[in-house]
Length: 339
Length: 162
Image (cartoon, rainbow over all chains, first blue to last red; front, side, top):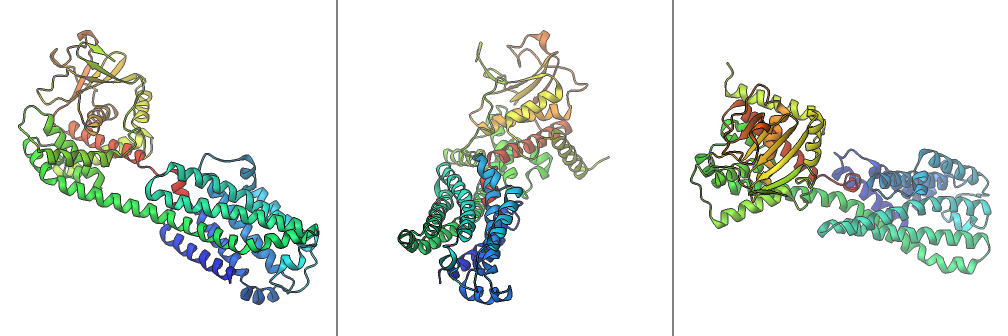
């Protein structure tokens, strides 16, 4: 039941990414999600029981699903490495092609040494006492653990950097990665306990597996789906606000253009409506030009000035580092002195 | 003879080519732009806010070319966006090479603190009433869009996950 739910969540995420990220250049997360979705689908009991006999009935489906999961985690790791300055050497190595190929070869080779019996949906419960099976699982989950904990640190850093609604996806990803890391630790503990005969420890940890698995996938899927949705919503909001401000400024701009014709009179393309931000910029510049030109009479009300200030703040944004320079290239000369 | 539409198209082409020649991409900061212009002109560039710049004729910025340096002198303004436009307009003249062949005709009243022997050529942002002024103001708008792009640029995190 949990596996079916996880698979459904993953396919919902894939669909959401295909819609919201269809024009994005980087596809790491989409590839990761699709690969993991297939892996999780193969782990659904009903599907496993149909596919495994087709592959010989010796649980090769487990290897195929785990290989796909590793490839998915590899793409996730590649995305994580591109997304921030935080790039631990070990994780950089793990998400390299050589490490992926080596890991896939290693789990395939070790898998061949497991006495796998016939098709079973309880692969590690049935065969986890074998050192080969334990090693197989430990390689898989160590790989996942490294990538998922790096993801957790990245998401937590992003949460701290963000504000408002942007914190939501980063927070969801942080929680999902934390549950994912805990899931990996639980599995690694069970693997070691099983192979060393500490069955009490294994049984003590076992109840955490399904809830952790569900929570990890639930929060990770929600976070990965929310991130592009929030970006798009903010983009649309900014666009609407730009259009609104540009429209509200039109009467003031027309008055300014009458007394002091600017570029929009000489070159109508300069204030074309195609690029709303450029149009708003031009409106502000021409209104400001009229305001400071002592040759013309141009007065604006307090309300108009407030609107102009709001429009200007909207264009300049909260971070004005790009628009100012504190370098030695810029200075100020007041009456009789300089600074 | 070109009609208004012809002038618009020419201006658009000139501005697009000038932005492309800068090789700064579509997003850049003002500091990067200043640096690129200095490197391109092989001379120091200084931007100076002049509190006593005479604005009676509607002048809000000047580009002063001396033997060794470029100066952009601009009036004081409460508006950061407007102040930036003053500077970008003068930088646009530099990028478009509008100084070639022009003489400095500024009177002392414009530049009370600049010794006459340091003056070479001069352009000023006043009225947008000639092809060079239209081109410079259009390019200034385009440069402002590039700077705005860098302010609102997505983080790498957003590019990957957003």
